[in-house]
Amino acid sequence: VSVTATGYHSIDKKVDVTAGSETKVQLELVKRASSGGSPGFGGSSNVPNHVPTAPPKPKKPANSGIIDI
Image (cartoon, helix red, strand yellow):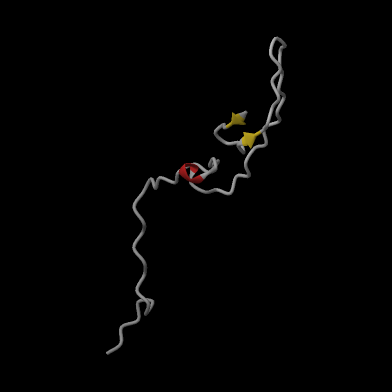
């Protein structure tokens, strides 16, 4: 039996099946650690996407307003 679920480690388990009887399999799914990575690369991301709401402010000149003549 192979179980795969998003956000959890996949599990493979060998099960013996007997004809004419019911077989039950109980597996514990273990959550993957959230590393803040991209969801498309093996883990779920709990960090919301950062969308800037205002343009960045211009930086002051390095000379702090002093004019060198």
